[in-house]
Length: 271
Image 1 (cartoon, rainbow, N blue to C red):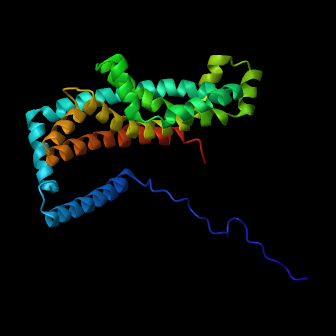
Image 2 (spheres, rainbow, N blue to C red; image 1 turned 90 degrees about the horizontal axis):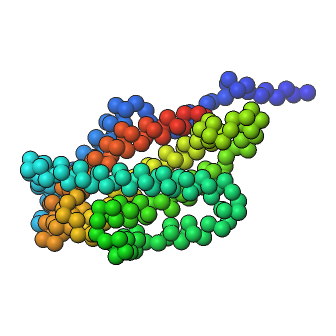
Image 3 (tube, helix red, strand yellow; image 1 turned 90 degrees about the vertical axis):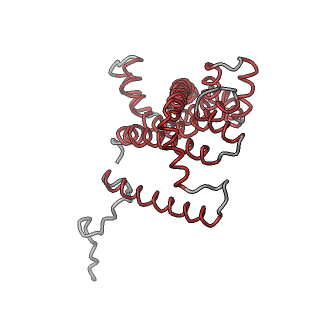
């Protein structure tokens, strides 16, 4: 009888999972290379176009330096960032609670599913307009409009996490007499943490874009959105790009310095 050799697990080639993470030096190096290439392409395209409405990176950088030296850049960035953070935290808290409650109870999930779908597809522009009409053009209205626009997204993501909660772990918590608060802290929240982190990363990208629209439409005299709206009125493209790039850099710092490490930490238990 012929013998069939079955390779052991130690002799099989092990395919390492693809991970772009690497070290922070590698990530920084690839980011620098990528952005440098983009900047070069931008400069070449601007040189070919030779149009005042398509400025090169050099001109935009000069405007950025001028606005920074005058102090306008820092004050407007700070105001917009404060609005973003307030709306973001409100949306994450309320959306998280709604998602947890809806996802934990089948009857509530069936009843409120249409509500979530409706508000998820309601344009942010409509929400902003209605909030300003009903509540007036105040700071509270601006934050409220942005938060309402983001809450359905957070609720849906957290609902998916609540639907997948382990019944075995919940039963174990009940048997050992954890109680509702201890169960929430040690059983429920750790399972929801990856969903919360994903909602936070996608939410930040959405919230700051909506904040700029709110600042432009709401008649605010401060903020990055107001500066971009004013520059648009005079077709001042370098100012538009300068403020846009400055705020993108700020958001990227928050993303790379806070949200990505947070998501990596809450996902450490996954193998």
